[in-house]
Image 1 (cartoon, rainbow, N blue to C red):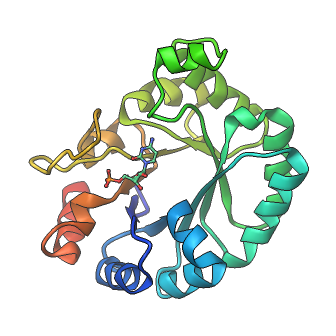
Image 2: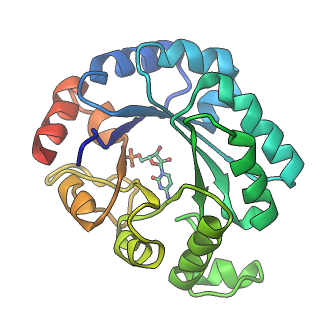
Length: 228
Ligand code: C5P
């Protein structure tokens, strides 16, 4: 792997805390993930302030609306120069194509969210979608790829399946990562950093094992060392 795959998830709405964590981990991670909670509280100006000094931003807004609106939101995000940003695949092929086109020549990669990991087979049935979850995840990943989307966010358990279905160039960004011995927290299905990369993950989204460690800088460094 010729890039640092660690994206540290900064799940706090506090700018000062975000800045501290981002500064502490900057030399050991490949980028920083900021999501809806932070964006709704502080907007693009807050993202810019918090992520100053960290060139690779994963802007995890999980956009889902009609094609014209999602395309507009993607364009509005480009001044932040995100490396990665997310939309929902269930917005459909026209919406995904519009998002991919809106990105234009920017370096930003658009990732699809397939089925939220909070949903199970019975939730899919309740919302009128065909299951099981694994089948629907692969269907949406292939649809995303055919619609010009660069990759998807997927659970550690889905990496091998999607890599096989979508080939080597499709970006796979994987949360639910726990170094051996780390607290699992509310994650149900976890994998170690090394095994996720070996299974085919391009980026690892890692939050609490770094941000709640007594020494976040050392925790990030230890994960990087385990990977290299
Ligand atoms: O603290 P932890 O390592 O569990 O954080 C994982 C990050 O990845 C969080 O920001 C969480 O919102 C995000 N995420 C996830 N599972 C998904 C999608 C995103 O844990 N399916």
